[in-house]
Length: 270
Length: 245
Ligand SMILES: Nc1ncnc2c1ncn2[C@@H]1O[C@H](COP(=O)(O)OP(=O)(O)OP(=O)(O)O)[C@@H](O)[C@H]1O
Ligand SMILES: [Mg+2]
Image (cartoon, rainbow over all chains, first blue to last red; front, side):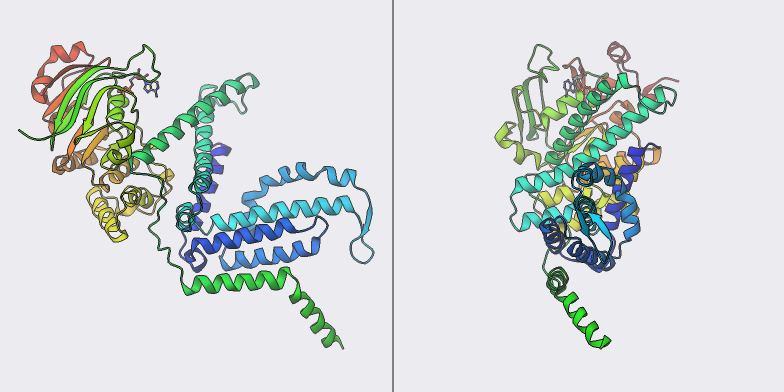
């Protein structure tokens, strides 16, 4: 088993999660889409030193995971490999920006370190939230829902094809690697001289697969619509859930909840 | 005389528009309800012929008509909704993640109501024995199981014309037998490519022998498949059923 095969397998397992039979999965795909997008918008809007509000968002994420009965640990295990990317993206901050800040009572930190940490967390949170979406909603439902509310077709197609193409690319890569390893008596790596031709081969193979996939869609009557067998009616539960989420987002992200807690604590303490 | 469903006149085709022609001057008709076998050695152009008929490469020379509709770019969408195409390579045919989604995809695109789609899928799953596989992921199926699914997702479309490119590869003998029974019970017009000459012998009345993109002969299956000399000339062998012990 090579790593890429395992990676494909992992994503496929996420798809299996999306097919579980429980209330978050059964919610209207648009609800989950709105939840995710609004979360991401809030996330992006956070200032690069604002660790506090980032923490609030982490709480919301955790609530979403709880509601969907998803394991945070498992999710982290599946997405750990993006951490190096985030590190590469933010590593310049702590090096270049050395202004001292006081974090909490006496703990000193440079502003570069802080913004690096915030960036890292932001990255993790956005990936985790996307994970929440795909682990509760199948691609089929999502595209059908977007189509239903008249999101431009080209936009849906991009989402769909990136998603499908990713699988094709990964599956082809894994096959090419297996074939390569079998013919080079199980060598561990790939000789650097062969990288070029392998990548070229891969490109050709995925183009071919992609074309065949498109042909197959057309031959099965695909004419640009997106459908699903799931019912796309909006229920009371959908509206209530979305309302509850909006309230949660407002209370937590805008912070009144914490102000109230503070006031209450002060009152209790005397 | 039966009404013609497919008419092919002087069809020539090449992939890259250069001299390297894959199909040369092919003409034949298929009448409604007929089952036709297409045989020929590797690379003789069988799959290409099916794909051209299905409208996947509309820039060929000559004429192809399906039910009075010319296979040209503007008709392709309409024609393709009435076709069932079983790919030679199952992995290129199946692109969704579960069996159920694959089975529903075709009929949903045809705009059928959900209850009708369900009915069709149920019927097909019963016929092909797919019920236990319906919730499974495609990537976790065996080769033969995928083959059955690829047949299933074509049957759910209830097409006018079935084009099948080696539909029995990877099937075990029981499923191959089931397939033959199924094939015989379908009333649709069928064109089937296969290297399994015994299968052709059992299922198709008429057979076309292709070689290097040309129609070598087009006749009654039994007569063609009995002709050992002719078959040998084009790198084929007598089917087992006709071999003298
Ligand atoms: N997409 C393509 N582009 C260019 N050439 C192609 C393409 N597909 C097939 N060919 C060529 O066309 C010829 C006929 O191929 P085709 O797949 O139709 O053969 P076939 O009769 O189906 O063979 P087989 O029995 O092996 O399936 C072959 O020489 C092949 O190399
Ligand atoms: Mg072929």
